[in-house]
Amino acid sequence: MLARDEELPSGDELAGEFERFLAEQAKFGDDPSGPSPEGPIL
Image (cartoon, one colour):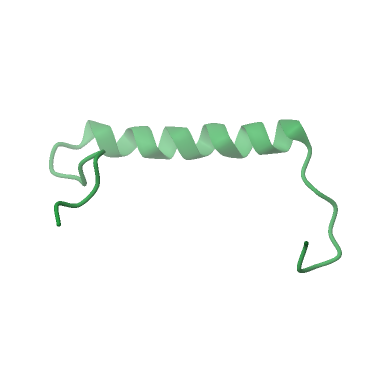
């Protein structure tokens, strides 16, 4: 259930957000000193 009275995003909007998310995640892989793709070692 939605918390607010808003329209759901379209498929194109969701795809655009997902592409931006993936691009941001790919940046982490370019920096060897950054977090590992597997996550933190516990």
